[in-house]
Length: 456
Ligand SMILES: Cc1ncc(COP(=O)(O)O)c(C=O)c1O
Image (cartoon, rainbow, N blue to C red; front, side, top):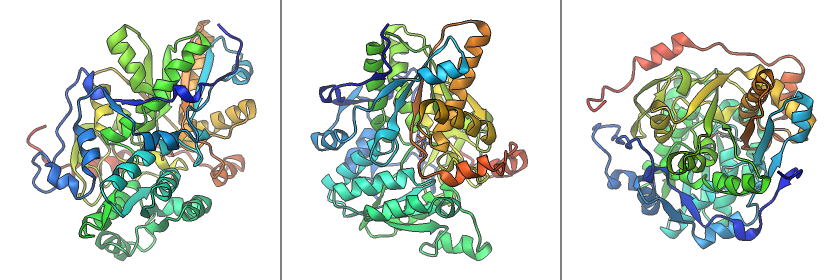
């Protein structure tokens, strides 16, 4: 084992393929249903929103899909990203565990989201798309797609959840710097947004609502705009697998193999990105790494949601999928991890969780920030509030290893930095950050509105 801290790959180690878990998954994919007819969707329905290359990736069972050269050229700006051993954190915790983290905050926009934004912008450009619409929570996804659209000369409209729009003005300015237009959702630009504002002019918005507005804007554009989603879908999860493929090589350089791989989950893409290549090693090569997804107690879809067919968005315009859900019109509390405020979860991840291949825990906001600050003071990087959920769980694992006197190798994905999240840190440091209990009543009310699907 080396005494190195940073494990750096060469340009030539940049992955040439994305890994598709659907080729190896022991659980069959669940059907994707039309929100109106509740029958399986056709490529025609999906092609209103997405270019054909991405639709084909969505349903592909090929084990590896080649990363186009144009996408790799952009990846080369920041990939391979570094993997570090958190030696100073280990020391601060006085733990026998070895803690490693993969740092996706090294991308120009500060998170893993550019891995799929680049791919999605490329395939849209290739298909002749001129403009995209999307939603964003905390602004990480919007910033990534804004940069990718700038690189491929596409216009972009971003529907940003209003509570985050107000909490994170610098993320909005970043998107505008790259040339995108940004609107606080609910907006008066869509029928759905106008209806919500008529009921409540101060509506805080949610990811589900912002998705509805972005989908409506694309679906009613007579083909002028397509829609892009930053998580949940198979092709998005697959684009993120460059994280895990690089991590495998870097753990090899470190001379260790993780006992547990950890990351936060919002829609599931950064977790899938690091975990699926390790899951392949479990399924195919006899490895036994635990894969641990971490969600906020304010939106605990995996740990407290029901596994059922539900709409992907609040206005019921997006397809119905089988997932762990809190109900499509459930609006999570205004936690600072805006990117984790989604009512559902990637169907592929849910099926694997349901079959016991993946574990999940939920953690409250205050203890998450406590872990973020402990990490920042030991390692220097201030994590995104989303990523801090993974850090909380990694520290818990390290302390558990200490209590049991075990050497445990822990790898977590530091999905982004929190340099634009100072308002959240200020709230924590000044004692104003709140914990939110599991909103049992609101979830129960929302779950009563699940679509009645005969297939389930
Ligand atoms: C830094 C960061 N990490 C994680 C997430 C969660 O999303 P996902 O589960 O798709 O990776 C987000 C979402 O916005 C994010 O910005």
